Amino acid sequence: MGVTTETIAKYYSQAFETFDKHREPPPIEVSFYPYVGINHTIRIRNGQVFVRIAEICRDLPASAQRALALILVAKLYRRRVPTAAKELYGAAVSTDEYRIRAVRNKRKHGRKVISSPKGAVYDLEKIFDSVNYSYFGGSIPKPTLSWSARKTYRILGHHDATHKTIVISKSLDSPTVPKFIVEYIVFHEMLHIYHPAKIVNGRRYHHTPIFRRNERKFAHYEEAERWIEKNVRKLKREAKKK
Image (tube, rainbow, N blue to C red; front, side, top):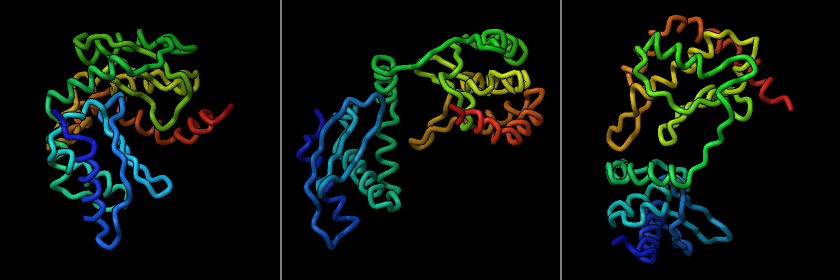
């Protein structure tokens, strides 16, 4: 059974005292909230602190709740998070039990906006099949493929392991974008399937050294990187057009 919200509120009072010994801790209200993932928030309104902790973390042990209190209050004060607190909390939520809970919760409650793999210029299904055969020997299971609902320029592609989806920015579905650029972005997202994220000391790493080495195996890697760097402003202008 988890720690009560009243007890957790005391942890936050103690955390406030840790970062500001000369001021009395404000009134604190703690509640559990049905966030889709392992998310937590802390807000101050009219002098009162409101803490929302992910429902799936309701049964975190007292030590991890204390660590989380230090983490959230440190961020509120824009102070450095104590290393011990970061490691203790990270170890608690990076266990298989909590990761499985988070994935199940996302599948149950998360929403994924899917359009179609066939764009005005490029067909993601055909590109995936070609890249899969050329670089992975056809070994990558085909996820749901989709163009994004809107044009974006900061994120050109995204792999969602929870929903088994690859979404490519609609900005690239254009006759002014070379086909090898779309192939490169699809290849990058497929590497996320081939090299799942690694968790080290509670921190998740997506772009590991082996990921980066394999990324450079793309036939037009250097050319693709140069094209993206050169055209990012153009993509930004197009994305901002109404």
